[in-house]
Amino acid sequence: MSPPDDRVRFLATTSNRVSLLSALGDGPLRPAELVERLDLSRSATHRNLKDLVDLGWASRVEGGYTDTVGGRLVLGAYEELIATVSLVEEYGESLEPLAEAGMSLSPSVLESATVVTATQGDPHAPLRYYTERVRELDPSRFLGIVPVVSPLFNEAHRSLLDAGAEGELVLDSAALSASKHDYGTEFDDAVATEELVVYAHPNSFSFGLSIVGQRVFLGAYEAGQFVACFEWGDPDVREEALVAYETHRTAAREVDATALPS
Image (cartoon, rainbow, N blue to C red; front, top):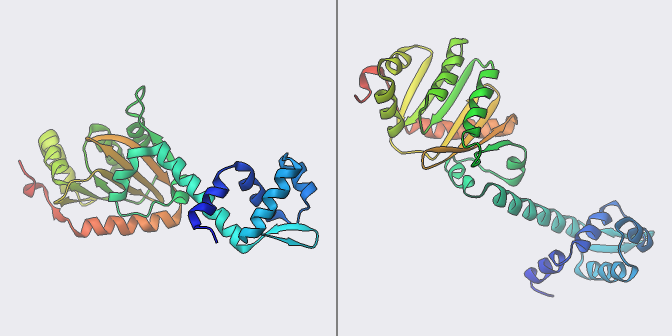
């Protein structure tokens, strides 16, 4: 038997084999039906069917050919690999900070997200998208991990508090110092309110995580710039985000206005 990588190479060499194996999931189908459906030559269809049968990915049955359980597993894994490669090419280095959040970012999870990335023509697109979406929501509670501070972030979170929501924010040391320095008594007053609890984390973050009601936002940062915003409404993603948030919150300490660095 040939090595596994040779068999993967056999499947990947031409899209005709992938299409043929996929079509066999609707089997049994006769070679003539496959020729018509896939617009393949008769010789290529017969040759590839023989190879797929020899590999154990297809079988000849009454009425034609069909895939096997092994064939379905191979096709599923191959399609997931293609999807993963496409996602890596699309989002590139933006994926690195997201892994720091501690969430399992599988291809299916990434594909289900609404994603807004920064471009040369619109470098602030992720920030604008996040703040506008937050203002559209009406949660009773929000949780956030914040690596940077900005007026737009503050205004968006302030709007949630003004609407009656309660919130928790975990800031890294740099964001905490910047908040005190840039916003002074305004930030002190926000921390002093009963509706908002602020935590200081000893490490720096290259990601941002917000759980606003039933929505989850995950942000990627590069050199302090918000470069990509991912949003989900999936309950399973939310549960995983809650676990990730709690992991970071428990490593932080609660602060009050008088304890903030001056």
